[in-house]
Image 1 (cartoon, rainbow, N blue to C red):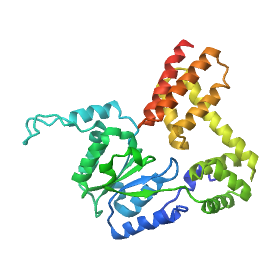
Image 2 (cartoon, rainbow, N blue to C red; image 1 turned 90 degrees about the vertical axis):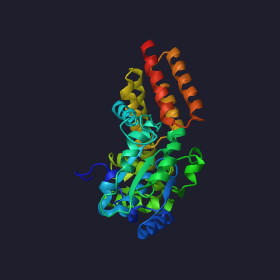
Image 3 (cartoon, one colour; image 1 turned 135 degrees about the horizontal axis):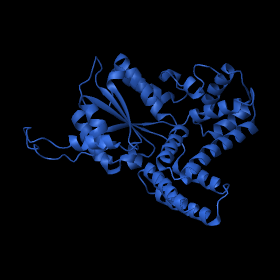
Image 4 (cartoon, rainbow, N blue to C red; image 1 turned 180 degrees about the vertical axis):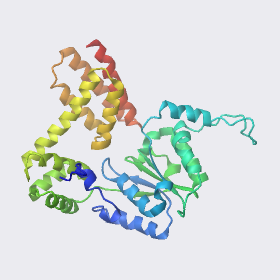
Length: 348
């Protein structure tokens, strides 16, 4: 393992589009736009952890080239604003009476997220020789009704900034925005490409791994490369020979340890730390809400809790799981569940 970069998922992170395994049609399409020096607004669609944001960032970097740092921004639609950002959004929403125009002295109803994180970027002029700026909005479906504000931005600032919207559910995006974008479908990498990558990593890290093991790794990781590399690195700790049993054991142990830590912090009543840990788990390991609830349920049944406490926690998880089915914002539902567990901890 490299001393400079001990985390393999970072060590083997692709440096450009050519280094992305599979997704040949997607790469071909994006390279045409790089050659043309122009592209429309995009919507990248695919399951969580599949590589949508990585591909979008690599595309942006190659498109903007030396002007990348000055003209690129990535924002997360599902991350709540800080109190400082909310205050700034409220201040910016008021147009001073000293200004000229029909809106002078009025308050603009632009959503706080757009006012604080998006407008300051898209309004600034392009720096350098880039044709326009690029804004990536990850988890775009989490904006819900606030998506209407993005439609206006696309119309007003399209010459100055192009947007790449990242989502797992195209059905959660309003039609006026879908109609203004080209949809890029990012599917999981195919098994043959996955095998090629894992064998290359195994050779560089002096690991022995059979084709059967790679098939199992592909199935356990659901074809998600970052999760597969994490599991491969974890399994390599016990020796250079990777076995199927070792993969299954580490996959289960790894998930259990993470979820158990989350649950214990929640039971202690520390909500800010609990929410931060939950977001880190969801971001790094790409669990969806239902996977998280299922793992929480498994860990609850292992902890030495009273019958009343266990039943109460199971009811809270079941209620949150049901609400998540029709929810636009998964982060809110998970945060709500964790807050209830933290509150309930005071009665344990």
